[in-house]
Image (tube, rainbow, N blue to C red):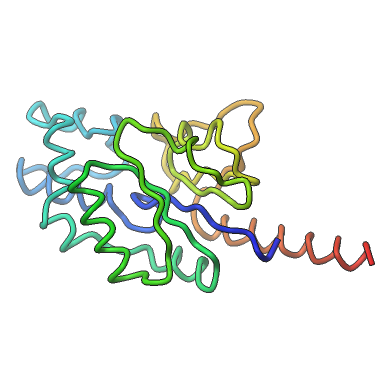
Length: 193
């Protein structure tokens, strides 16, 4: 299990994308909205002037990429592991995401797909998939799948019934799961000799 690969989503998994988009929208529309008020993935419930096109453009903007914060706890958990950033986006978003990853996480490998494509196309059978979107976990061939809920209850991170998906509220939970799996794997190896 030590040789497992870690297939990790980017937005709201290793960086705080939602918080940065919300900061930009709050400034643009003179709002004071909080993350727990978001009910739609495109933030459209927060103001009539917000739509999917605007949010996609924000994910491509220099303002977003110059200010988005890294989840340091996540990076500490992933330190020394074989990490593949498995993400989707527009051409511009993916180019900026690639530059950000290469600048901040030079050892991480990249697996990208354009918007509208599916992560089920990636072969993740040799690893653990970590994502904050339930639908991106369902149907993949990952050895283990972890839904990162970030302590929020959004429509896109629902807990599926009767599935093979583990649920984590935060990266501390993920760290404990990985530690447990490694411990069990080491015990199994010890007793199989």
